[in-house]
Length: 189
Figure 1 (cartoon, rainbow, N blue to C red):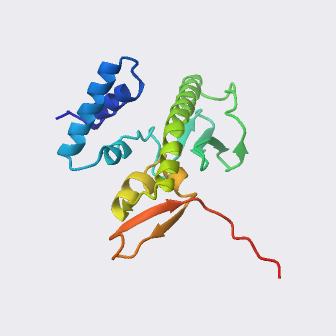
Figure 2: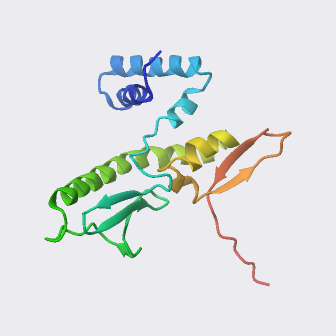
């Protein structure tokens, strides 16, 4: 087996990004073995491998400049959103001022840059996977949906902007699914 979730995420990264096909195939095979040992499909295991990017349960991150604090969050397309301490939306992270703690501000700026970069990479993969899941009418158990999608600090932004459906016990026991949220059109009489 494999030692930790971090090791499994790194193995998954190798399977996704490495240019050497033999190594890539070996990594995919290993992921398949691990999924089988956990009694999961490869797709189910991959859903559990999304990093939380050190976000809080609401899917936000505190950026501390010392004298000023900012909140970084995401919209339903996983585009970063910034707010100041009063909740006003900002277009970009402000430059540090002389009244700010230079070390804290520099660390916050670097943290925000890394957060944006990582979120962009994850968004590209996860938006496509969710679209494929919706088109394929993929179903999750209610618990798996809560734990790995709606309850995930980053992915919650993607799925909470979608309409979910509960399915009758006879058809899909304890399952839920996603559908794009559409506005109802009024018919003219």
